[in-house]
Image (cartoon, rainbow, N blue to C red; front, top):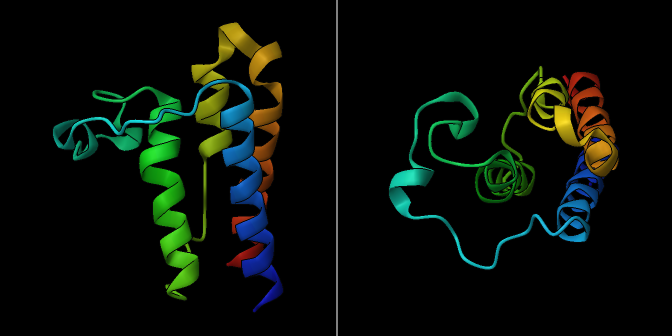
Length: 109
């Protein structure tokens, strides 16, 4: 396995772990209508942590597992900073992990 793929896979696991630690991991998926939003980050139908769990993580895992071309840019950290602006202490680690993901993607281009 390519080192960058392994690093990205590890980062996704860390993001998932942090969502669980913060209690932002849901046991039940949102309905299919909410998941099919065409708006960036599904902001019209999902909370950011739902988007991370049900859209972002599965898509990225699928891309890594299928050796699909990876995105060349990622701006997830700034979105997280905006979403969690009022909860920066609680969300600090998640924001940091998302920033590391953004850097790994750019480095993987």
